Amino acid sequence: MTRSTPGAPAAELAPSPTEPLRLQVLTALALHRMATTGQLRQMLRPDGSRQLVSRVLNKLRSAGFVDLTALADSERSRTHAWYLTPEGSRLTRDLPVLRGRPPYPITSTTAASLKTPHTLTIVRAHLPFAADARRLGHEHGPWDWTPEVSHPIGEGERLVTDAVMHYTVVEGEHRRKLRAFVEVDRATMSSERLAVKLIDYARLFHYEAQPVGRRRLPSATGPAWLRWYPVFPRVLFVLTGASRTRLENRISDLQAMVAHHPLVAALAREIRLAATVLEDIEEHGPAQAAWVPLAGGKKPCAWTH
Image (cartoon, rainbow, N blue to C red; front, side, top):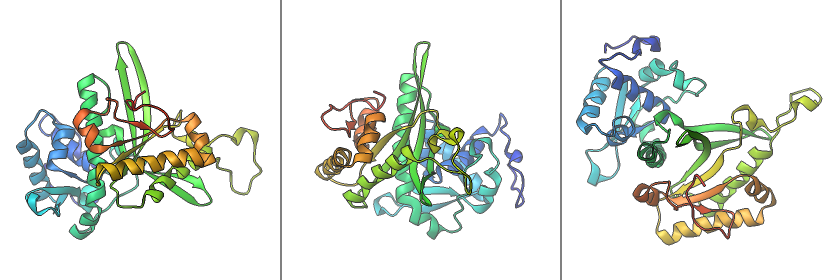
């Protein structure tokens, strides 16, 4: 691959038999914002070698399309997070999988390092679902997980969900399409602030946009989320970054919000809400009974149930 000039069209990166992985790496970094070499290997070449992905990344870095920032953990000093340079971002912005996605420029290693912990944890949460899909014969790949999706919830406010997941369960000739809003919590905010996110999802569920300066018309009624989803996605919380006891307490606080807030309780009657610990789904897989329903009194189950 030759280095492009600024503003070169993304068509120059049309896949060819000799370099499909380069295109996939650029697309993955554009969509997922940032990833380690190991995460990209699990995402794009789970049966391939780490060296294969490393060679591609180093060539892209030499061409000026990607750059890296070292992870803070001194014990993992050789591990880096990769991200697109402004030139790489320009090169990928017209790819079909990225249409409608807002730009996400990172102009320095310092800017990248500030985003690294949360962004990499969101990628980490995606990987068990992808591994489960490969194992079970379901449909869910790198482009079926879209981070940082923004939705209006009224009064000029917006809800930015950590990721929107599309997943198709394949059972013989039957295919069941599932969607989920995924919130990834690293225990860096208070438990109350985490639980308040349920109120925002309840607001999104009920929010109906109104044309500015016009009378409300019967044909205009209906929730705003129907613009993007045929059914409202389930809401999944994936928790990590604290002791088991503390994470269980945070899940209990989410359940309390469902029990005591009338708007959230109404959401829970219509939409499945659940929470889990990231390390549990990494070890056992998301398809196992690792999810605690937030409408209390129910046993742990698989997220698809």
